[in-house]
Amino acid sequence: MLDKFLESRPSGTSPKTIQDYHYCLDKLIGYELSPEGINYYLNGLTCHNGKVNHYSAVRSLCNWLYQNGYIPDNPIKRVSAPRRQRKLLPATTEEQLRTLLNHCVCDRDRCLIKLLFDSGIRVSELASIKVSDFNWEEGTVVILGKGNRERRAVFTNETGVMLKQWFSQHSSFEISKAGIQTMLKRLGKATGIPCSAHSFRRGFCVHQVKRGLSTRVVQTLGGWLSIAMVERYSKSLTFDDALGVYRMVNSYATRG
Figure 1 (spheres, one colour):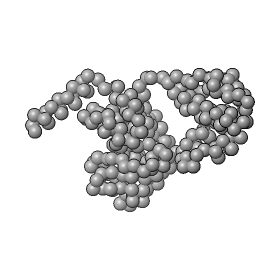
Figure 2 (cartoon, one colour; figure 1 turned 60 degrees about the vertical axis):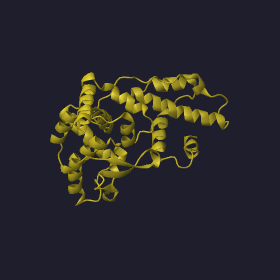
Figure 3 (cartoon, one colour; figure 1 turned 90 degrees about the vertical axis):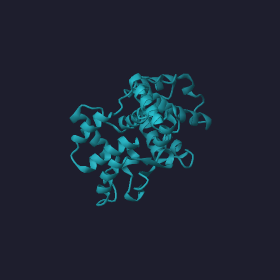
Figure 4 (cartoon, one colour; figure 1 turned 135 degrees about the vertical axis):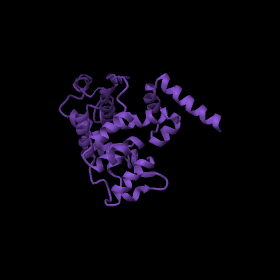
């Protein structure tokens, strides 16, 4: 039945979305498809905010089963959605980036984390980059984002020098998504710094807002479909951060 549900997904559904369905729903097998069984399943998860994704996947499955007559009642109607915890998650800082760079074991790893910090791209997007994807003059790289949508990501001149050196001898980063995740976990363990693609993505957002970019510009550069996440990440800015941006902008205006 789960296979039939996945086959029923609209054409154009990305492999990543199907993978996410499997990740959430394979674990549901063996639980009673009732309000009690679904609640028992969700309450046993330890992924905190990730419970929302599991609930969403179960809801899609239940709606499909009910709409196609496989079950007489829709149990998800009597299951409350998990609440997201609103705590601010770790965002990589410039100081932490320098520490992580010092603990990298090779030039490729340094390129990877520099590009993560500069662009805020996701780990799956990073792993698929090829040398032909770069526009060195523009300082951008074409990536395949969520929903199989192509977009451009940015990087600094300093990172561009590192990337050019690597790609002068290689056609790709020669590492898988899982390999990048393992590398980041190793760096996190070695330094004690929270280190994941999402901590870099959050760090990209916070760093760019601190430098004076608007949340709308950061949303476009980072490929967020909604500005809500950018607004949420930027809540970590302090008054001193805002004061620094104010002084920098007004200093430029005075000189102009």
